[in-house]
Image 1: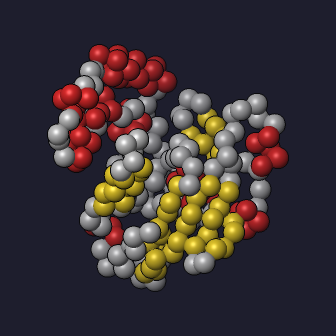
Image 2: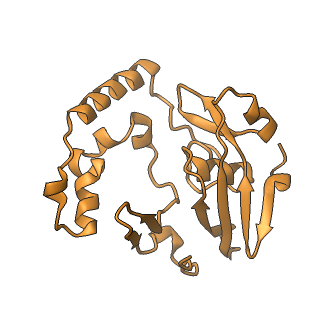
Length: 202
């Protein structure tokens, strides 16, 4: 699979179409595969498209600020696509250069922690529509967020808790709601992006 052949430059950004397939079921990692391979994977491989735009480059650290938009929503999609392109996200212990987020975590420990986490998620109760009525959208998001309501140990898998400091930040989230309105929320740039140009809103 040649990254250059799957990347399509379009008006200042690049659209990549690289299907993803499970790399290891125990670790939950993914990898890119060809469209031909994806067609014969019996549903295990998923089509995945991302829009990438280079915003700035720092020659002093040899790092870039990239605006990424997942056109599809696959697990680890942006992280796998950037790593496959030869530009892994800084400090990513799963797909970056060096590091192993699974070091010291046995399969039994992982399974036990996962069972406890799933049990807590099942017991957690979501607020009703009546309870959410009249609240600001930001407050609604907090009420529905597992991190805010149940804590990080319930919201994330054991290996995810080991992944700290990845230079990946959700700058803007936009979704069309069932009532015809649009939820559009942006945040400030994270510390690792300071010194780079601010991402444009698209």
